[in-house]
Amino acid sequence: MVDEAGGSASELVRQVAAEAEEAWKQYAVEGAVGPDTPVEINNALLQIDAERAAELLTYLATYDLVFPGSGCRDRTHARRAAERVVRLLGYEAAWYTNITDLSPGARAWNPVTRHTFDGVVAGTGGAFTVVLLQVGED
Image (cartoon, rainbow, N blue to C red; front, top):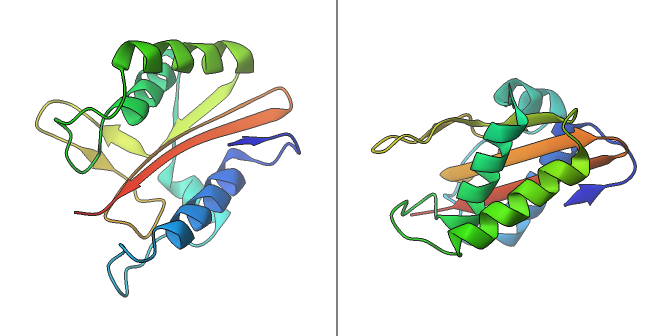
């Protein structure tokens, strides 16, 4: 999702998370809680560099967070798309994620939704903010 209004990354992540929670509500665990405000989202996000952003964008576009061994998209195509997004925002863009570890055998993140699994990458550059969010339930 791209925001041309110049909203902050955490505001747009919260907006996208709310849309995902609504779209996937039938799969969510009843009574699940998660961040409700841009401030809480901001506290869950870590700043990353453009290269890490491209890696994580590629991962989220390629693999399933619930079943990490299963690929959903072509990795080469996903990497080209991720690199293009990074270039379009500019190398001075600020990038954020909630993902703290995606090493083999380990996955860790700070929740940004009420879903069991979520991963987000957000970037702000110029007048644009982009967000890629994946949610899942097992």
